[in-house]
Length: 117
Image 1 (cartoon, rainbow, N blue to C red):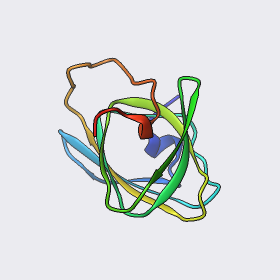
Image 2 (cartoon, rainbow, N blue to C red):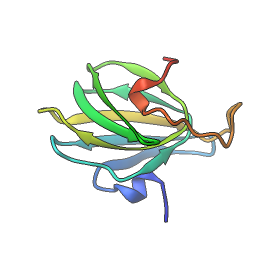
Image 3 (spheres, helix red, strand yellow):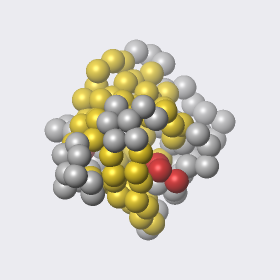
Image 4 (spheres, rainbow, N blue to C red):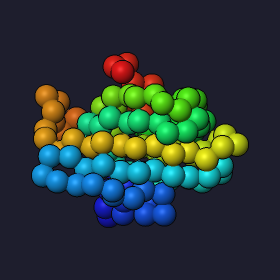
């Protein structure tokens, strides 16, 4: 089974650009929408709207609240999420295709709890 978010959640993730080095995804959801477990390689996330989400990964859950205009580095990871706010989520993910220094390791921390930003 694919863990590609554009395959696991095609109603929420849309590929808007791709070449041999990066893939850019647009993510949109509404309050109450959920994603199934999926993976992202090392990525940069740019928030286009304020949102509140619950992210689950590695048996942990974390609530994340981010304002519009935030840019965050996300280590490669597998997670699922739920919009627990009362606003729509709109974000852009720039996924790197080149292997990082920790290739093959996936973070167990949900996206909002990354130590590097």
